[in-house]
Amino acid sequence: MRKSIKYLLFLTLVSGFLVNCTDEGDEFTTADRLQEGLVAYYPLDGDTKDYSENSYNATNYGAALIANRFDEDASAYHFDGDDYMEVLNFGNIVPDEEITVSMWIKSEQSRAQAQLMLCPNTDRFGISVNYYHDSQNTNFWDFGWLGEGGNPPGRTYFRPEPFDTDWHLFVFISSVSQSKMAIYKDSELQIIETDPRALENSAGKTLKIGSNDGFGYHIGCIDDIRIYDRALSEDEIDLLYHLDGWDN
Ligand SMILES: [Ca+2]
Image (cartoon, rainbow, N blue to C red; front, top):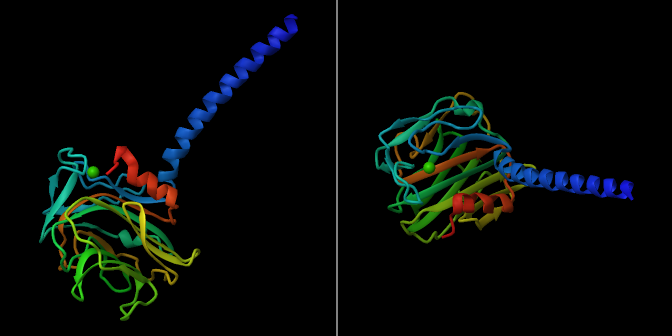
């Protein structure tokens, strides 16, 4: 009898221990998933620092702090047409075959503009959403694109992109191992193609945020930029979209 009571007590302790472990394990897993493979993270909450382990901080040339999508003061940046940020030597750590870029963008116009560009802009790593092209609003995602016309390897684009001036989460994936390039908007797939290309010759290049190389300035706001060295899953993209309770 005493033995079975002891055994019951033992079982109770063990099950309590297991429940605790599982809870902590789940929390760890969720946070850990969005940290895994993160090579750059600019939350843009009052500064332009990189909060990943790499600490490739951005220098700001004119962009102004503004409220983010949750109406929290000074938690995103506004670009008025001649502003940009730059991260020197980002080309030394940029992923070259497997990459995901996630960023919140609020555009004021459809125009010739870039929100991200590795410069000098040769084989291109660049993002241009709400770009007015061939009389249509377009979202371009270039990774390893060599400048050929048409719809070549290393480039995918979506149009016509319906234009509005709201915040949207854009996620861009290029993966040589999975043979895909994809663009997601607000966690919905916009387009997927099967001809990615590896990025070459990136050493020493500068990452520009909010412009191309001295032109193509973005007009609008940018927030929460994350760059990963892997292709995020659709579940992870959904996690990013709803992070901090966003449910629009
Ligand atoms: Ca922010």
